[in-house]
Amino acid sequence: MALEPETLQTWNDALVALQVLQVAPQEVGGICLHAPHGPVRERWLAELGGLGLPLVKVPGSVDSERLLGGIDLSLTLQTGRLHWQAGLLQQADRGLVCLPMAERFAPALVAPLVQVMETRQVQAAQALPAAARFGVVALDESLPDEPGVHASLRERLGIWLDLHALAPSDLEDLQRHASTGVQPGADTAPQAAALESADREAARARLAQMQSSDAQLHALCSAALALGITSLRVPSLALQVAGAHAALMDRTALEEEDLGFAARCVLAPRATQWPADSPDAPAEQDSGDDSPAPPQSEEAPPPFEDCPPEADSPASEPSVQELQELLVAAALASLPAHMLDALMTRQAAACGKTAGRSGQTRAGQLRGRPLPPRPGRPGGQARLHVLATLRAAAPRQRLRHRADPRQRVAIRAEDFHVHRYQQRASTCVILALDASGSAALQRLAEAKGAVELLLQQSYARRDSVCIVAFRGAQAQLLLPMTRSLVRARRAMIGLPGGGGTPLAMALQLAQEQAALMQRQGITPLLVVLSDGRANVSLQGIGGRAQAQADALTCARAWRLGGHRALWIDTSAQPDPQAQALAASMAASYLPMPQVQAQRVAHAVQGLRAAPA
Image (tube, rainbow, N blue to C red; front, side, top):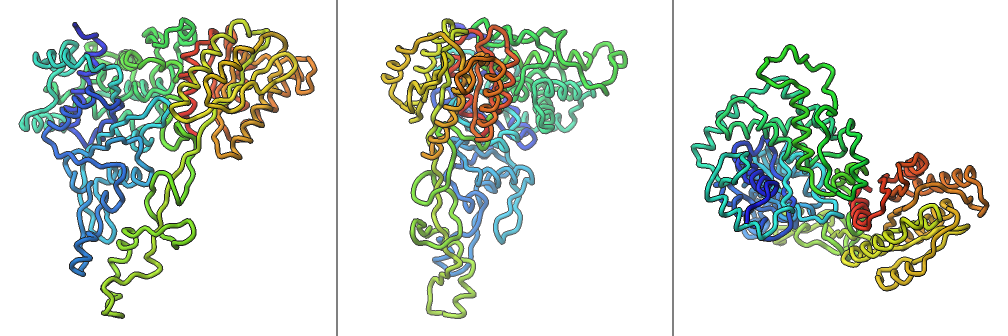
């Protein structure tokens, strides 16, 4: 069975990315691979292991001493003299560092790793700086509702790959295609990733002589700006990736093919917005197809004002605007499914310090995920960390033995270190469902399906769902916080529709439930499905003006609480009132005229992973 062109292109880019990493590991920073554990990822990792470069694996449980180097505690205690050992980063000099389950790395480990990547040298305690030049391969196994790799590390990894589209059944076809061999970037068959030593050195020599035009530089920056990428580091990384790709193709000057590869692997995965001049984006989401189509080339955003005019460019070279259109089109064509909803709600860049799938983090001393030990007094709930205490005492043994030679190991109170742990609170999604007459007929059926999907997803995460329904002259707690799918179905079956829209009452009730959850250590998330046309005030009296004012007041109160929210506008067209309410409560806004259970569930997953 023949492979789909998109599947073949994805795998081809993944192999070419490994070749780029061989040519310029430090310049491109590394690769962030988003793929589940399985045969496809193992095949890619096998190609990674066969590159011929030193490869050091750094587990998430490593401590700072092992990462950066420090005292060899065992040898120091045996000999009575201070001995130092090289860290994992120093051992990876001129090679690669592989981070399994990189999304689980604590900020305390990401910070020194990023610092070494920037300075290209490692500084251990009381030791001379040592060279540490390497590329990083971060394996991201996070689910759609999890935060993923830390933002500071992801930003420095030039190439982002996503292999979720490849199925294990495609491996045989990939193997058959790989036996034919083609050049990088072709649309037929991918080639092996490993390069011969002579080819690698020749490509590096060509990279040192790589030339790029001003139009190409302006096009990279303009394309990044059109896709909502604000970091100046990204266009620089894209230029390095394009240069390494050109060096692989035996060129010393950039061409459109090299820029297209950089657009697919560097710019597209980082997109945080749909290009500004694409009026068709809202219309496409109504069709039910979550895969966005690239905008027309004539509607691409304009280049920078200081770009040279097209008349000054050679006739054989494309202009800045043409290059920009090419890069934006290449990036949009490689966007995965559901990216349109993510870009419209501005949640595509959710990473770093987030609430994650299980709520906000909190420090503890008894249970949870282990954190690096800190100096402290043992006692009560604080437990002594023996190894960290010995490491702190080892450098001072010579001075202490002079005072009391009879002591083999002299430990003082200032050496004490204690255990630390990190716990995560559970999450509860508060679904405020508009059952009024203005939209009940077209919304309730799909909303019930969305609740069932949310409960199925929450059961695996041990999260909960709470439903607040509002219609007529009141808002009621239809379903208290629960994980029971049967209980939710029973509550939704008996929900009638019709009547007024007491939106302010619903927001006030959701605020009360959120405060109750917060006192219990649970992170509340609010999802409102409504057109925002309130017509019943907090006193239960009709009148649009007062009802809208009360709704705005309650929306601001939710914002002051610091909780996250998502407003799904069910109007036929994006409604200004709903947009104003979403802005007042600092909620992500997603227009969805035809409510779809799958899209609602996916949007809530993005809300869970959004920055706190």
